[in-house]
Length: 410
Image 1: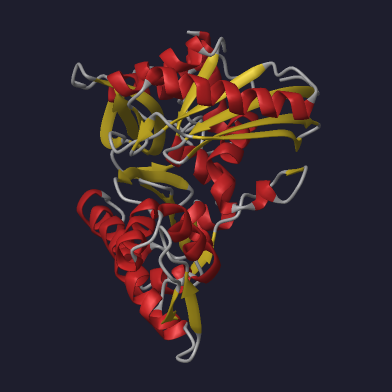
Image 2: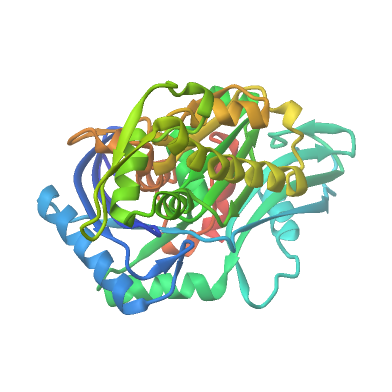
């Protein structure tokens, strides 16, 4: 990437499609265009109507382009849905050159062997993420290049996606007359927007709670260890309010935003709210505590399902998470959700606002924009990435950059 680059990102969510355009200059990221459109063809993060989603993408991108007043040179698109999974694999090669040090080619051979595992025909590799290496079965290191040994082993994480889901996204992007897109799974994008380097080293869990899915990312010792998705999100809370208050979805969403809270013990006993009547019926008054009794159980369920998935699938024990819990996505704006997360995970919590960007308005710092901002930050971190190297995620800098540069060359 040169001194100045113009990058676009598209986040195709269950509730809305977001398009961002950013000017990247001398390492700084300036968001110059934002476009949003209600999502009419997506359910639980996956496309269920090609034409409607194509139209939503076009509308969002047209708005962002009109606001930005510039043409983008690269496009990054998020992949969402509960089909995203993490696989752990190992590779081992012999080093038969006497005292000649281990090279990046040797590391590349280990990675190539580790990723040569059987993947079901209906799935594809979205990202390959190297972990630790071991020299001569005894010395563990993140950077084996330059060391001497006769045997090199390495662990990698392979993030896979449903081939059909990815093809549906690509079809919508192509029908929207957008070309040369690079595809990134949403959880990894959100992590690029919300984690800082200390949290990656100390260990942290991110939950990106969207409308109908909750994405999970775990970092530990500077490495991305786990990516997963639970098919439940903030829209389930809204639906509970619809039924609990016998009101419209629009009223329910407004009530969630204006009066919602994730914990009953944080609500004033005496506060009263008025529920508008529907179809000519008179409004009625209820206590705010009665309202929160609708919200808290579902919010707790979302967090508990994410916790259970981590315990079942992740190889990182919760007690090795030193930095705590990060909550992002639109539902992270619900007051008290960080405190509720602390109770369930027994970790210190914080709200994950997008970091490391500047630009128009305050929207880009809202947790609801973590995925779209993260796609831009991913593009900047993946400096020089092309379509031919898609899927090479680079969560670490330094020596790992050399490996990916070498893999691109071959």
